[in-house]
Length: 123
Image (cartoon, rainbow, N blue to C red; front, side, top):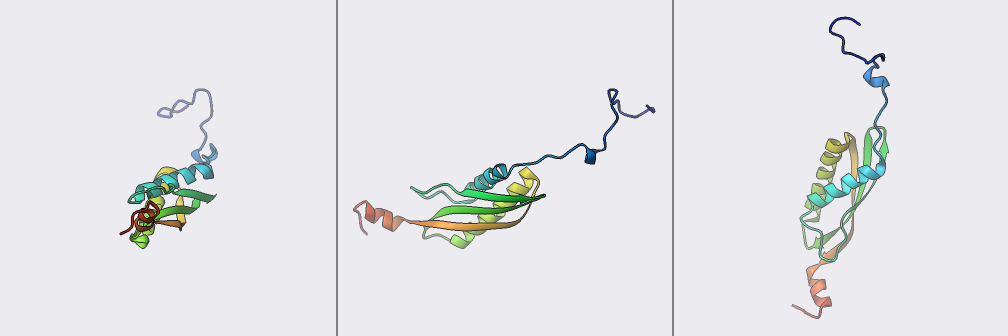
């Protein structure tokens, strides 16, 4: 061992690229994406379900599909854009993956007017 070389404890030093790799499961990335979608939304509608995500990971890229429910009336385009942006930045930051695609599926719109009518109150 030459002066200045780090001690190896009797083992040869292995180059970083040959040590192995860390694999993050699709379901973990899906949980990150679903949480990021919740963070991006104004609120989950009363009686609605929290956002759900499915993810397909290929190498270091994650394709994400978010299913969510929104209040109506609201700016649906703005909320979907905010979800796409937040999911992309959180998956990149926490999982170290590129996110070339975030598909947002609005499964249901919750209307205050219809909810009030169902409770026997009309305006």
